[in-house]
Length: 294
Image 1 (tube, rainbow, N blue to C red):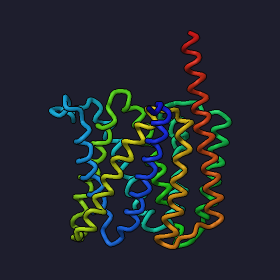
Image 2 (image 1 turned 60 degrees about the vertical axis):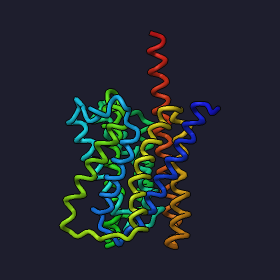
Image 3 (image 1 turned 135 degrees about the horizontal axis):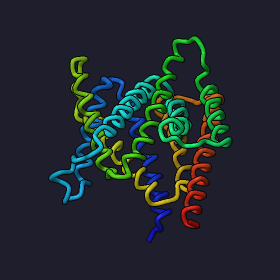
Image 4 (image 1 turned 180 degrees about the vertical axis):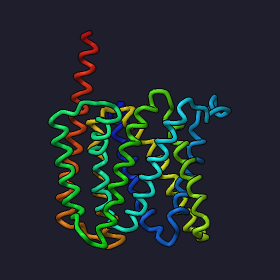
């Protein structure tokens, strides 16, 4: 029988694997419009979530008293999703994954203004280190290639607000409802792209595109379960396995070899996010200790 921490470790590992496979399929899907890939991500995500809605909620599963916050979460999530899809098609897989690790850096900044949290010296140091890492990877300058580096950064910005919105929603909303509304929003957005032209997939491609929704749905669920069951400090480092998978798939499928600058920048971003996570855990322990003493 596995302990809660061991189960959380397993869920995080499966989540990283599922997200990595989804990224590979999205990068592969260049023959299909992004809007069409979004449809498969959203529609098959909806189907997946219907299997996990509690039976007693089937008649009113959609009911919520926080529609406004759901809307903001979906809007920021859609911006992030479209940005990462564009980035995956335009940049090496390892580069996109490396920059995407910077999301907690932006979450720290947003938390100051949206959650009125106090950020100490160590977390500000982490933010600076993380931004240096992003600069190393993207090499800001006037170049036709550099414009695509903005998309994984937009993804980080969107995902950062998503993290804060989910933190607020999860106090009263079940995880499956938050995820369901996001998948529904993706599906609705995809319909507006039909006039741009969709391509009829053959049976093999249909199955692969469907897997974008399935893997995206289960990855989000497993990620939530991991954080629910185990200590954040234990499972968070596993997220960085995504870079190993990205390097592996990028090399063997697209002959992409990450540069030294990409790996060095990724290391800075990972160090930065680890500092942020460690300080978050320390802050939570101090808060818990004060509450217990009171």
